[in-house]
Each structure stands twice: as C-alpha cells, then as structure tokens.
Length: 93
Image 1 (cartoon, one colour):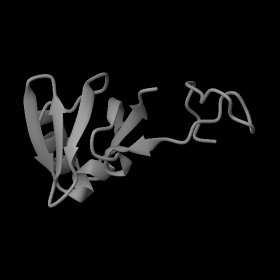
Image 2 (tube, helix red, strand yellow):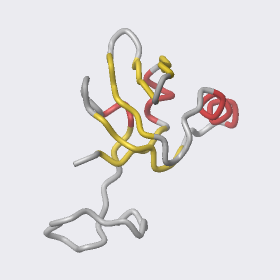
Image 3 (tube, one colour):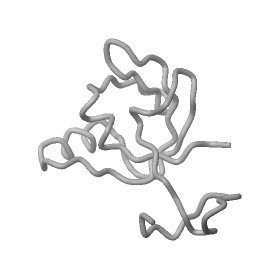
Image 4 (cartoon, helix red, strand yellow):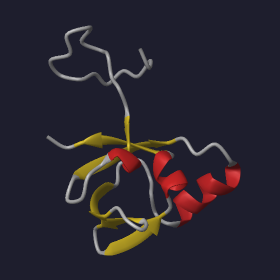
C-alpha cells in the first residue's frame, strides 16, 4: 500500500489501496488533477513549481512526443520525461 488516505473505488484488495499514476503515464487527450510532486532533486522540484504545476491543478495532455505537452487552463507547458515522472496525478473519471 502507498499509505495515502484517498482510495480507489472498487479496489478488490482494500478500499484504501491506491496506485498512483504519473503524468508520464497519461495518454494524449487524457485529463487529470495533480496530486503531489515527487521530483527527486531540489532543482527539478523548483522547475515544476515555476511552470505552475501545483497540487490541485487540472491538466490535459496535448502531446507526448518529442516532449510531454500539457495544458493547464490558458497555459501550455512542455516537460521532458524525467520531469513528467515526478508529477503524481489522479485521473478524472
């Protein structure tokens, strides 16, 4: 278990079991809400914050190659694969 208090609905293992998804795992056109940032290095975390990627922000993936391009409201940003792995998201149903 990951220890989070938000659970997946209909999980056969436990009601509070939650497997986090990262921004890098989303497909084009998919929407999600940023849950937390887990960038390993301080510099990478500062980059994500400077781009406006904050917990609670809703995003939509516009493109995955050659860089992950996401839209947040009226802003569009591009991230490399390493930065996208550091953004934990909750998929919208």
